[in-house]
Image (cartoon, rainbow, N blue to C red; front, side, top):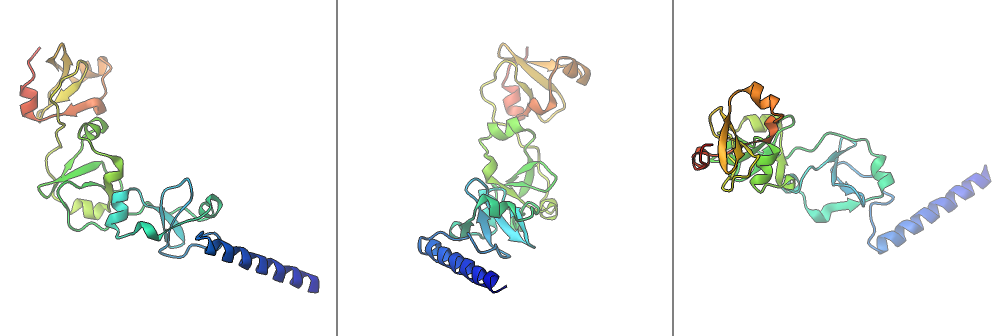
Length: 216
């Protein structure tokens, strides 16, 4: 029994010594268990907030800043230490004052651009990219905060250079395919499907941009 106590004391002294060395070198977050409110990351991971004993991923830089966090408060820990922490929900940013130009997303919704104080849905991944948006700029907010923002029109995609094969539509229901620089109407949903097109590939553009394309 005495030998076990001696060995235990030696291990503790060794751990304390290594901790002091690492602290002197500026390496933190190795031995101490993350505490409530800590921001942590490993070498290969994103950033997490410790909340209710779980690690909640901060989904974007915008969400990080909107939550009032600071980069210098993020502690790097080992992959093993990070993986030992149970996974929690995605962190939602407090969002009570919508700003024009913000990109926001609720828990179960698409992505919206705030424009004139309203939320305008970005109708597709193609529209998101065509508008020059980036995923790291999307602020993840609660559904309650999202629903409190008035609904605006669908966000049109900038469209000045028609490309053959593009699928486009204006504010109306009609869908067109670009062929030889002209727009040809697709007569029905059945024809759309028969031609092998996919709805998520349709770009919603402004009626002005649509009218500027010659009819085929």
